[in-house]
Amino acid sequence: MPKDSQPWPMRWIVVAILLMIVPYTIITLKYRKEAPAFQPYEDMKNRANVSRLLSAGYQRLRLTAERPASDVNVPGGALVTPAPGGLTPELRSTLVEPPLLPTEIVSITAAPTANILQPYVIQFICELPTDKQHLGGAELYVREEELVLVPTFQRIDGDLLTRSRQTIVLVTLPAGTVKSGTYKITLVGEKSSRTWSLEMR
Image (tube, rainbow, N blue to C red; front, side, top):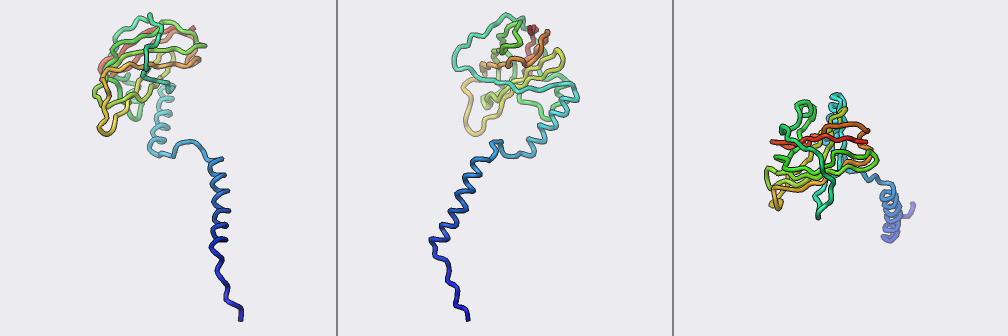
């Protein structure tokens, strides 16, 4: 009769586990993708937005938007005029989910001309509907000579509040965003928007 097999000593079990875990951890950390986790609803909504915008002739660009901590010397001089509030009917019917807009655009500082090889900076003051919103970013919708700039805001969870409903926003169009030509820019607010002409050289 064969002798009864003896169990492995605990130290060899620990060594075997370490020999498996350590290489696995190193490989995972080295080759793991940095992309955010898959979010089915968000991904499907973004794909639908892109498809519908392209069908309507729009190109969407995400821009850097920030609240400046100090005074920024932004070139001005553009002739800014009032415009009806809200998204254009075409954009409103195209977007899957309308963005959260500021109530109104109070003032704008922007130049009437710009070089396509340099960034174009826009500074504006807008009014928020509540003190439970904060700046989320900005999106630029481009169609031929029409530029629609949409600042987006997000709701604040919990008991946090913004310090003021009126906020200063700095938006930058990177160099080469659009080709040379004359464009009509509309900065969108819910109740009132602003528009001006921009010549890109």
